[in-house]
Length: 493
Image 1 (cartoon, rainbow, N blue to C red):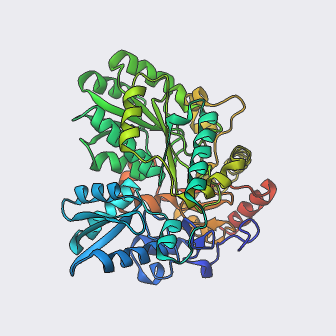
Image 2 (image 1 turned 120 degrees about the vertical axis):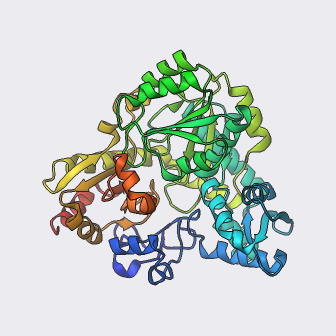
Image 3 (image 1 turned 180 degrees about the vertical axis):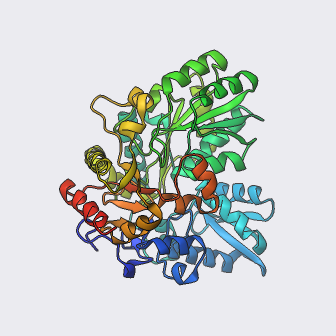
């Protein structure tokens, strides 16, 4: 397997390769700026070369083969299938699209959603936004291609160890940690929880978030109020909103993706206390990680994508919800998640994640130091226009939850001067892995706004997110070597 520290997937002939370069890699190489645009526009000359893709967006080959096997077994002419980890996930998919049936694939202990072919696009929206995805390992096992040697007992033990590991870092109890097949599945579970506990109420999203977190709130439940916090006055808008309307929950990221900002949490707590004391606060700490921040200082529940820094290897999809035992909602939230949410990762994924995360805190520290060093260096570079990093953009809010000696996470973003002329040249030349996702042990770079908001670039710009923004997830490489690679690419623009 390629050493991605010394030989990153970044050249034109790497287009479509999985990152890491094997069937379990959760990212896909998009080495040139034109490849990103081609992918977004559905150019088959680009898409046909994909050997993988971020699983919620672009089904890896094994999962596509599993769908085909399910269709052969369960679908009538004119029907399609999606396969889920459990039948309850398939049932939720059918409810979302409004037609079809959910069946249990007993031979593999999987769930299958069967629906008319013209509902396929809608079904894939559920797959993307709700994240209740069958994993590549699980698909390979069901297909008999790579039968897992992990026993049920070993899987249960790995799940238990993961929960204990997260709980210890978070200062909570293992029974307060719930595991999911992806970070978005964790967010979806929280949203369902809020919808049931506080029916017919909208949620609030503060600050510009990761794209699907906002879409989830807009497409499901009663809808959402979005306050991008472009202006300071929006905090008073929040106060007015809370005074006028009961809210199911307030969602925040710590820090946000991709602008690395952080809500002023002390101000938020003050506003909540005065305007609507009972409204829950949900914080996602995927970028900062539990190693660097204590989001439970603020949050009633904390969501995280374990696919990212917690795993680091980029070969397993998973997510978590950690409840705050001191929250007044703890009993109700715990009861809902215990009854209606996932509790275990599939056994092969659990063992992989447990092994990957054994050195999580050490890796998180190194990634944070590299991101800080790169961001600081680029701020002083004459060809760089702007840099966003939580050490500055996180402000008082980030410092409020930052642990003693805690870092600021693996991520930063930047734009170049004369971006129309320089961005693609820089990106195409840079010697670093290029593709979606973050938190990998190897540095991973992408033109984030093009990937996440290609159909709404003007709207993203109105929220302060440039279409030319380049997002960097710093890995474990030698710091001086990383800086040299960025300088080398900048010298060519």
